[in-house]
Image (cartoon, rainbow over all chains, first blue to last red; front, side):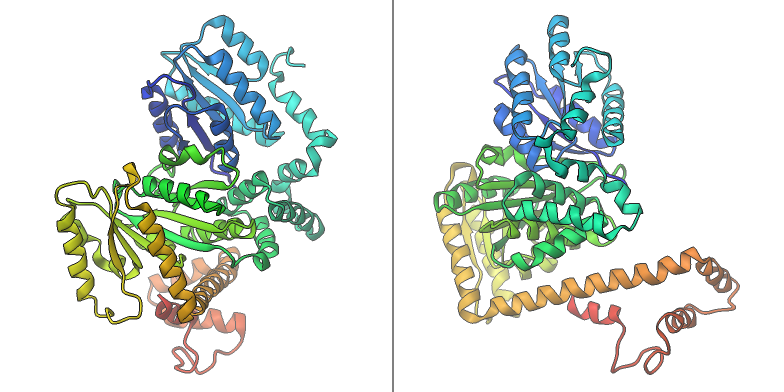
Amino acid sequence: MNRRIRILIAKPGLDGHDRGAKIVARALSEAGMEVIYTGLHQTPERVVSAAVQESVDGIGLSILSGAHMTLIPKVLKLLKDKNSDDIFVFAGGIIPANDILKLKEMGVAEIFTPGAETTDIIDFVHRTVAREIRQ
Amino acid sequence: MFNFPCARWVPRALLRRNATRSNYTVALRDRGAEEQNDEVSGRQEVALVLAERILQGEIRAAARLMRDIDDGFKSAVEELKLLYPHTGNASIIGITGPSGAGKSTLVDQLTALYRRHEKKVGIVAVDPSSTFTGGAILGDRIRMNRHAEDAGVFIRSMATRGNLGGVSRATGDVVNVLDAMGTDVIIIETVGVGQDEIDIARMAHTTVVVMVPGLGDDIQAIKAGILEIGDVFVVNKADRDDADHTVHELTARLEMDPDKDRAWQPKVLKTVASRNIGIEELLGEIEEHGAYLHRSGMIRHLFEEKNARIFLELLKERLFAEVFGHLEVNGRFREIMEEMANRRKDPYSAVEEILAQRFGPLSGGSASESNPPVGARLGEEK
């Protein structure tokens, strides 16, 4: 019995640039996934609540405001608090290499920077979900 | 513990074995295996764990069961059996209309108002899947996500998927989960264009049909079925110039309804959902319709009709799976196809033979009037 992959795409924080988030949402849906798109200006609390209610496999966060070191750890912590850290988190945006390392150490599954191919993002989601199911 | 390569997933695996993470997660992970081996005790254990947690109002458990329902897991049925006695208490409201009519915004505002009345609200937002890729972008939360943090609101997005058994039953099952959790009001939002959506709307006690000014001929285009299912009509975006025209057009069409003498006369209301105008009136009208259903006893009739539909659909589906599954496995299906191809067998006799083999001699031959086949009766129901 096959699960259909469900991914939440959210834009936490204050920047209003949602082009990237929309492109990723579109790409994942065209790859056969169900993408729940929450739109702009989401708080980490709302993102995590939505992810739990929608029982998604993963959360994709798009952040271009520079607030990634505040917002992403908050999402990770809330997931843990809600016993839902089996939901993986990936992010996209303008994020410096140093921060990428730190975020990955905190448990972010992957970070995509400008220029990333949508096919890579799709592959990443497939791989990660497959690994989750095996465990 | 995060330091070794590829270790991101290790902590989770460890956590899962921790006492704090209960058997629940482990059981879910093993679910796939249980699908194959038919160990009844194991499956019931899972069912009990999930259903019990749902009855205690645990959102995570409810969300997980909804996913199992959506993915067509057999274990979901066991859990639904346990939840069923706890359903039937929620008011179910269907909101349907063309895309762009402002349904999600309307649902958002209605939800805010219900919350002020201290009602627990569940929202099931159904959007179409792509017929090519099976994927979907479910964007109803864009308008509603301010309620995400509110523990009294549960929003679930569903895609139509187009799988056998139909989206309407999956939706009905999800509604039952919300109902069992003690949700007071459940709003089902659908794009009112196809039969699927109309079937979904028919699960509601009160159906609100949302229109917008300027659609013109669209009222004609979607009139089949949709004007008949509306208990309340809303012209949203009523601050537009041609709103009154749309209201008149709708009113006129409703007056042409051959059933217009029925006890409940649908009204046409005006709203501007984005500015929270007309929402109280809409909620008032929805409650008025609810009161009418109870006063007139129509609610019982509604339940009877709905129960019959669910039972017959399920029976039809299970019977089909039972009979056809067998035919496919033993190769008889292929044989029949060949016999039909060279005109040695007609499909009518083939079906009769198969049914007779499976269930013994049929009562009164092929089209017994006293005992019509399930399919025919189902047709009547629709």
